[in-house]
Image (cartoon, rainbow, N blue to C red; front, side, top):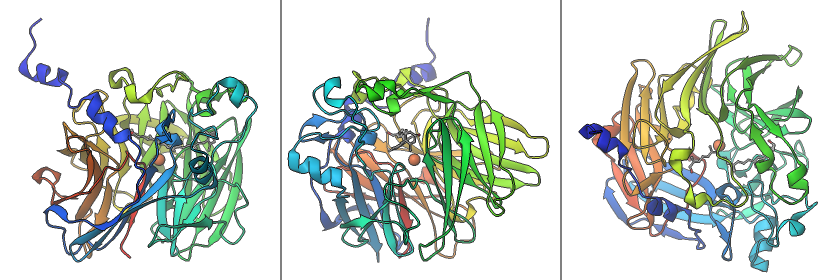
Length: 484
Ligand code: 3ON
Ligand code: FE
């Protein structure tokens, strides 16, 4: 068979596994410096701080973690002031982090497969999971909070990034109580977050926080079955959760054979339950609709139009199994199903759901204009694969104009690997895409990370500025920007 030139191009990979693997090296050092290696110019109007969280350690003194999601949280802060930028990073000093640092070995089981050394005998009936703080970081009510969905937030000094303790919001949260890593801030400036307490039936807590960082409202709901819910969406009137079709068999976990997350299996042929909870009137009953959606970690946004609720989400056909003997560094991207953008139209009158694929490109870490959360919106951005089909590492930033169905791509391939982009509106901006996209890019060629600043109106004209750090930052999870 003779291939057309474009097919040959498509068969060629945009990356090498070895380059990609470099971003999964631990960063043991904590830095504090002004960034002096800058290409281009930092826009003078861009003032504020970008906070990022993610696993900083992928090993404990040489003992490899089984999965990056088990890595200790490390916060990076990049502060922009008058076209200069300052970098600082620091680990969240959770009790587990300190204990393992002191011992120089793995002392705890992780949710995603990390086991104590010594095989199943060393892990059997140990239900103590290491509490980490690696998923998100938000600055809210003058508090900097590191978030991980299975326990309470850690409070950090926003300047020094020193860990100050746990945050319980004046006792509204109890010790060990969960507070998810995916809060949403609505158009009125209320922060809405949730927490999952799983079991044979699952409790979903919903919190509302005012701008002073106080919890002003907490409601809880019980739903049937086990839940693994990482993210949610809000609209003006609803909080909406997608209950992924999964089963949970805790026996291998109890017997020390595998971790909690490895006991979760996606049930490909089962439907997803969409749990719709009214925000304002808790006496109004919750509604549950069903649809085929595969597995969802992240949603982009949701909004109401008449009797309809529209939700955009990233769906996976299946989840890569993190087998106990596998190595995530050897991921065969072609063998895993990519995350893709889907739109769900829920009709609350007829209680029906329609869905369609928005784009075939593999993408993750979606973002959008913060003032459009829960409201109709036109532009979305996401980290994406370089190529328009198939599964591959995230190397590009993708912009989608949902109104005109137009697409733009900025790519860091072949040696660049990208994390979550964040959209920052330009001060006094008039249009929805008038602003910047900020992202960390791991540059495998120099084994260091760059902070890139893109013009969100036009990604394809290339980066406005590229700030070279003095070191790499391991692939991260989520972060946020505060103009303060
Ligand atoms: O659902 C139950 C309740 C619960 C809260 C059981 C449970 C043990 C699974 C659980 C705990 C869940 C936790 C601790 C989840 C943590 C998730 C995490 C740290 C990260 C998730 C990241 C998701 C994505 C999609 C990342 C993608 C990254 C790339 C494509 C780039 O490498
Ligand atoms: Fe997430």
